[in-house]
Length: 361
Image (cartoon, rainbow, N blue to C red; front, side, top):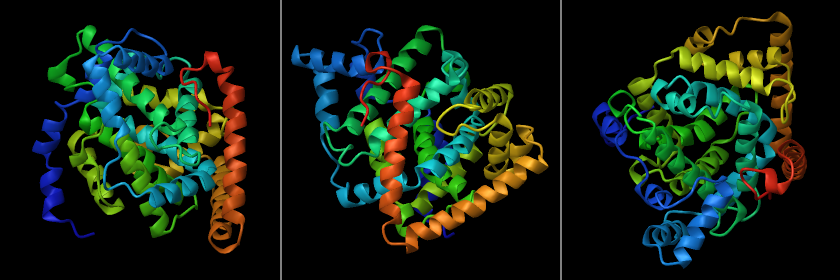
């Protein structure tokens, strides 16, 4: 892959160091006025405070209601339909993406400090599934849509987490700012490039056009999440280079990485949406992760589970071929996956008033 000089400059170690000192001033400004609450209530507090004249909250709502000129709604629509049609295998891809994210030791330390993935792991990851589901509804990312609101709720949650860890003497010299711009950019990478790479390693290879559509979807979602425009990549190729640059900058597998990875594998075992044993999840992670992380996590070969993953790969190849060649297959997959996700999330997350994120597409 040809690497333009502009990419090398944009993602140099010096530039990435600087981005680790920058968070999300817009969301942090609004969150400074909030009381601790569920994420859905946080956005409602911002709306109430804005109506009462609070300048920071008014600014947050006004700026997030604007749509950048580069957003192509046709591409966003295509990206969300592709994501929905492949949502089952994409969920599997996200498993490895999250585990790779934990190998960035400074970013992983925030999760350890807050305990968000040490307690009730399955529910935390089901909430992530709820965000993906809400983003996949038609028109969901347009201002006021269920996906748009959900992303803003997550953004405010991150701002409140920053407040929480700073109040508990967060070590800026050791970890830099909590949930900083480099960390936020890597989160987009997890949901886009790494999820797609995991899918491909499980037999579901997207076309170049579909990869670009999903990338555009996540470029806009990243903007809504608060990622600075200078860190929003323009193409999948640039995103892959950004991934490699961030990995070189701060990948350092440690005991916290191991603990988080083990917590996810054990916490998701026999839980929706995958409903797979830990043995099967470990085999899938082994198939998707880079060799250095397979070794670091201690994901040893398992003849029976590896054979099952090989069968899964072949099944995904057949389903992917049907998606691209069989008329109506893609649309049928979208309908089935959307309804399956909705039912599974309603069953696992409980009644509306019990959810951290209230909306459900």
